[in-house]
Amino acid sequence: MFQGLQFEPVSLPDHAEALRSEVREFIERELPPDYLRNSDFNTGVSAEFSQKLGAKGWIGMTWPKEYGGHGRSFLERYVVTEELLAAGAPVFAHWIADRQSGAQLLKFGTEQQRQTYLPRIARGECYFSIGMSEPDSGSDLASIRTSATRVEGGWLVNGSKIWSSGAHQNHFMITLVRTEPPSANRHAGMSQFMIDLKSPNITIQGIKNLSGESDFNQVFFDDVFVPDEMVIGEPGNGWEQVVSELGYERSGPERFLSAFRVMVEFVREVGDNPTEAQVALIGRLTAHLITLRRMSVSVAAMLESGKTPVTEAALIKELGNSYERMVPELIRQLVPGRTSLRFRQTLEECILHAPSFTLRGGTREILRGVIARGLGLR
Ligand SMILES: Cc1cc2nc3c(=O)[nH]c(=O)nc-3n(C[C@H](O)[C@H](O)[C@H](O)COP(=O)(O)OP(=O)(O)OC[C@H]3O[C@@H](n4cnc5c(N)ncnc54)[C@H](O)[C@@H]3O)c2cc1C
Image (cartoon, rainbow, N blue to C red):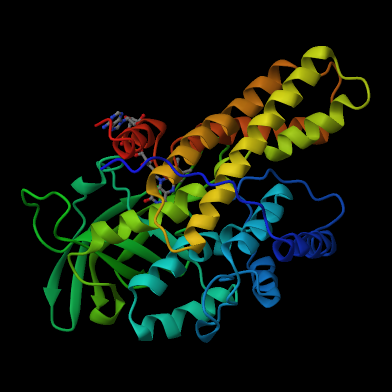
């Protein structure tokens, strides 16, 4: 039944805001003065930087201390993530593990999995990929064909995953597989396995994106053995588990800040003498940004109280991704006559990455479907 969308107004508490200057000082100290990178979480990778963040206690912030976490609130985590993104810090190595894989292990993993992997993730030493999409199954995730068959002590996995971000440099992939053949209930018979990406019989092939970088991959599994202790949750419960991670995956500031650096550089570029059109654009983009941020902070508070705000998260992602695609497009049309190399590099890189913003993590059309269902319209 339709419960209504909930976006309670939430202010970041003082103890969360107090972290902001600490994070800014850390960034200023750790990144070179001429550092320039877009605010896209998916690009910069630095194990060294991730480990320094781990040492500060800024990975696994909300997890219990007994698993290497820091028992802090989602609102404190929010401040840390938005500052790192705004600076374009190289966070991708640990990003998925911190954002959703760790939360999955905490919620569905065995005690042994939690004790073994969560502290390593929190130290910034252990990185995860998401293994959902397949060559013929993206939006329609329930149609996956990668399968696992029972063998002594575990499972044999066969099939292929695609667009697997960071699989070439990460340690594990939480992989959605069919452990039973498809049936009338399309969501039944799936399971999540934690697969060691260095296992025998795995082939990882890079795929080039528009800008010529190879940050995602196709991963082939050819009789890959996965021991029972690497199954996450109950076999057959995969769909429910995947759905539960979407609240984490879709609602954070990375869903509307990817083009933030372009905006900052644009403001710097137009300086003290902006045209009327430039002023109007900066005002419009800022107003959108503030609204999206308020919605996203509100969802962080829902996560804090243990809710699963799937519809609200989908709405933030849909609006946020549309926004971050619009930013470089509108700014491009009002570029001043002479621009700095710094500004051009930022804008050009963002333009090449922007088409992916509305694909990764679920396309706009799919999100609109989720929102419509959440509103009771379908
Ligand atoms: C940069 C990037 C990183 C990614 N990283 C990962 C990753 O790490 N792990 C992972 O598992 N996946 C990853 N993905 C994959 C991403 O989740 C999929 O691309 C996405 O789910 C869409 O699937 P698809 O590409 O197969 O497109 P399709 O599902 O084939 O869709 C094609 C088009 O049809 C539309 N469409 C499909 N079904 C419907 C429908 N029912 N109603 C209306 N329109 C529809 C879609 O909106 C889209 O426009 C990544 C993608 C990108 C771009």
